[in-house]
Length: 521
Image (tube, helix red, strand yellow):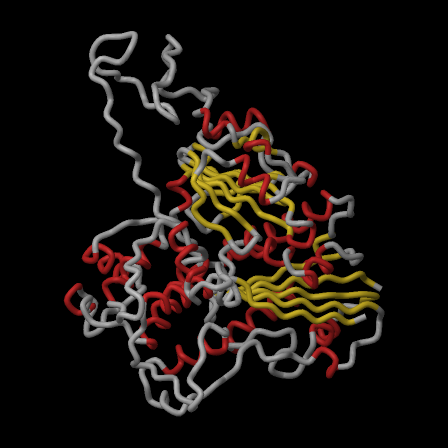
């Protein structure tokens, strides 16, 4: 059987799966690649400064031209049009989501309002570049002035300005064109994996100068819902290896470990890790993989736990959420937290106290929870350094992808894969070739299928398969993406026995992933 699936996820993040069973090499035509994007050429973009960006966006189905064959790159964009481009690029709103009887842009404004983004609601009025800068800053959870938003865009490399990389050169008062809008989005997609909301400002209710039961002003921390937290009558030491963490952090413990605990407390509870891996985010992942039923990654930075991840369900409290919970259950259990992001039914991100919590869902298993990532809010803001990474991070990503894949298998009663260095080399060479060759496909530019490449490397198999992906920030995200696509999931949970993972940093998508599965013959 040969199965072929190609899918684009979250605006520019790519995955692709291929499976073959049986020893014969498949017919090449049967697995020939489908183009991942159309190379459309509009009659009015030849020589335009944004022509390549326009082709890129068209190939990603983010935009279209006009019936006369033009694109009109210098035509002004309205706020509803820019919102639609932005939210479709990140797969937050379906193009078919227009409300019955409503205006075409209603669903986009509804989504933007849920994120607490700054909106003008000026209808068909031209949208200014300064307004776009404020909106882009808001997608990173920041409510900034036009001046500060422009400074942020320039400092992050999201804009080089219109005439130069300065506030004046940005030309905040100029209308935003179609070409400029797409350029902003292309740069944003390269830097930012998801959209988040702007935290709501706390209500400023008057506090009585003489609270009931005491004299003078209260010096206790306000409790959620009003009032003050009870005084326990005891003081906690400033530092203690066994000190407990704040209640909001303890509510999301994994294997009994919570964000905020010390490294020593972690070692006391779980022992020494099997590996210490780079994360790409500034902290070190402590990998506990000796028993995949209890698989956990613990992020440690400066002697403190700053991140936790598992896909085994071994967490505690978490608002009552378990691996059998649905998105609705999560929403109910996280009623006291602020939802700040997510990805089309595949994940949901909440802010609770000092934590950012991401729940990962399995669209192929009734939308049930299949993973939990808990990070200190400060650690969550660190951008991935994958696009400038070296061999050490590449090896860490390969091993983490392998471990997370195995944890998914073991959780449903499957045997874990055996790591295979030889086929990992085959996979790594294909990831590098895709990056260097500027393509994304199972079949390389020499016309070789995965099975040709395996054969060339001396591998003999009774069954084999391949998953590929590009653009995902880290192994947690890429495996979640694969698990939410039926073809990739089939390969991950299938009957092959050996797996090698090959990753390459570089190319237009910054990072390329290949999983090669096989059963030796």
